[in-house]
Length: 475
Picture 1: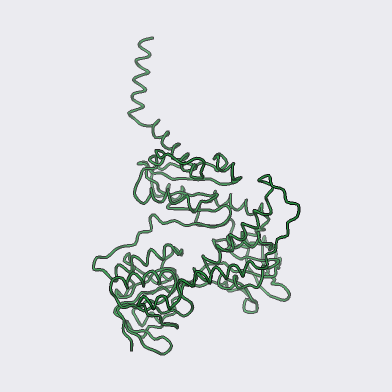
Picture 2: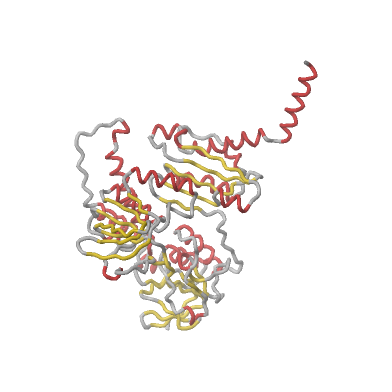
């Protein structure tokens, strides 16, 4: 039986980051992975989806060159190799995280599914392994609704959609979250007739409603159909997939060549966790602020335990958990300043609290906003759809921010930096911004806040009152 200081179960982004860190602390480390290293992010999530979105954006821009004053007499776009291109990018990135690369660094790779035998041992393909500490980073899987006829249908999830041989003529997408919106954006621009189906109204429920509604209208203008506030009744498949829904007390059927379920995620907890005294429920493994489970020698990170299911958050948890495993001084995880981005077009990025959330939590908050259509760079690049909204406390600290628009995912980091290090929002107005850039939207909102704060300064108000008084006496 092989023994290690630390065994990491799961070779996705979180597991890979943790393995290198723990190894750097001088520990003997093994990673157990049932599939390929890199996990969902490399193979079925971030990498293929953003590659597909970039290809879709290129197609869209080529079809709309007239907005730049460019005329095209004939345009024949062939998308037959797009999914092959996506696979080539995935393969290229995977080439930097193959098992042999990690083994050369002294990190053992164990292939197979892990099951706990007891609190210090696991079984993988009938072989036993022992460790002083474990780190669980097994991720999550698509959550499929319990729908009549579902077992007879070859439906798609994020794990299978990038393996399609070609772009489908039509695509039904069930869901209204991040995966649904990104895939609707991509496949619509690549030529699929896309219909997005959801039980509730609106999209992206965790975000700012006004911004989500603006994005929804933009997607509708591009030709994506949205059918909302309905019940899913049944599904079947012949030449096409047929989804029966009930809306406004009437049943109707929707059909398409393919159907994608983007209806949430479920944690991968099938590890015989009870043998290791690890508590979990349907939401995932329970951890404390040190990312320890109910068994202090077993940690859990990433989608299997956190409600914040993003790669960058999983990697941050890997740093915290890896440090706690390897060092005597314990670190805690803090989610106060985290952000996320939906890579639709326009992009939607967010950090912290929305305005409504901030009003519930604090007595005195202010909302400052600015629209892309008022930015010179928005005009030069013909990217006028979008808005920035910054929520500020009474003391001037940033409580949250949302950006909908071109390069939102990049721009949000300036606000995230200010929020993380407690800078007053008005200080951002004192930078000299390069002109013309999209960062102008941050300059303009911070300037608006600075002027508002200046005009409402009690000392300035008092001086103005005194000036008015003296002026009155002289007259």
